[in-house]
Amino acid sequence: MATCRDVMHKAEISADQITGIGITNQRETTLLWDRKTGKPLYNAIVWQDRRTSDLCQALRDEGIPILFKQKQAY
Image (cartoon, rainbow, N blue to C red; front, side):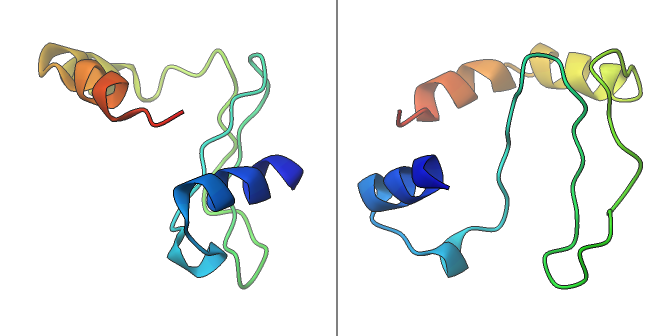
């Protein structure tokens, strides 16, 4: 939570302006949940998951990773 507060302070935004958060945790399982219900939005994604490999490759082919690197604020 301290990290989230620090980033919001640096970005000069409030919690209601955030639509999503991405977290990496050394190849652990990732899960997204509905803020209001607390229910998962979809099955968990584990570090070996290949369901999005085609999408990731398409984004790489379009040069999207470069765009993310350019937009990194921190």
